[in-house]
Image 1 (cartoon, rainbow, N blue to C red):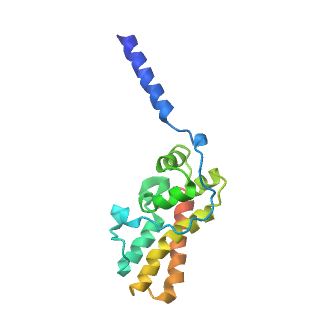
Image 2 (cartoon, one colour; image 1 turned 120 degrees about the vertical axis):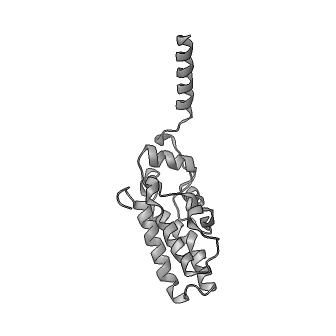
Image 3 (cartoon, helix red, strand yellow; image 1 turned 90 degrees about the vertical axis):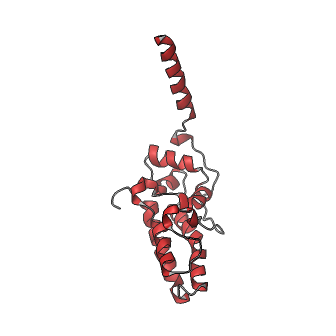
Length: 170
């Protein structure tokens, strides 16, 4: 009976090992070019308390917080609100991102570099995915048109922190 249990345990371990993906086995379908025309799925982030419409100054703060991410969620800082952009830009699945970030210890810049991509293009892709919300803020009178460029720069700076974050600090 012990031999049977040992063999069964060994078989389960092999099956589990066969299902896992090694970082070096992950292949991208992307080019690393800046992704345009894609809007971040920010309202999917339950913690953001964002209804998808920029109609108050508090919504602008939510956009900044989403761009920076949640430091308590390790290197990936929480993908949900920008996952669609990450998947499109990196050309890998959410699960594959976790393998590279958790198993290989890469931040988003490291994931880009793993594939030979310029991390700055990811930052541009992420930033462009939030600009439609800023433009909506201008249309709704929440953000003066003269401040659109400054707010775009603020969002980009927060995404830059997120992409290059090394796990130290908040």
